[in-house]
Length: 118
Image (cartoon, rainbow, N blue to C red; front, top):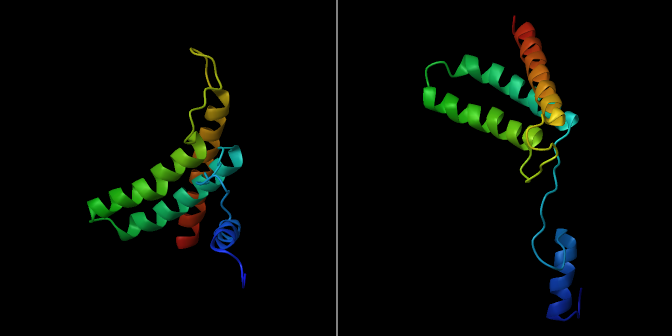
């Protein structure tokens, strides 16, 4: 980069940082059964470990629940985009499948964690 003009250095820094020339990049995460299963495993494992350690601190347990269960579940099961796959009045079967996968993987993680703690 020696001898490059300020504009060329700025363009190179954008390329090095991984951003596009137009400006802000967005993280494209579309929920799938795999992301739902991973979120369920993380939530089940984290909450089964934290539940034992935080029995008296209700506020900390609430914050941990929101950060480790609610936010990942929303991000990796429901998604953040405005997506209407099902027609109005119909059931979104893909969302139901992702929710079931999330719940089953969280239950599996809790069961394994509890079995290993005994």
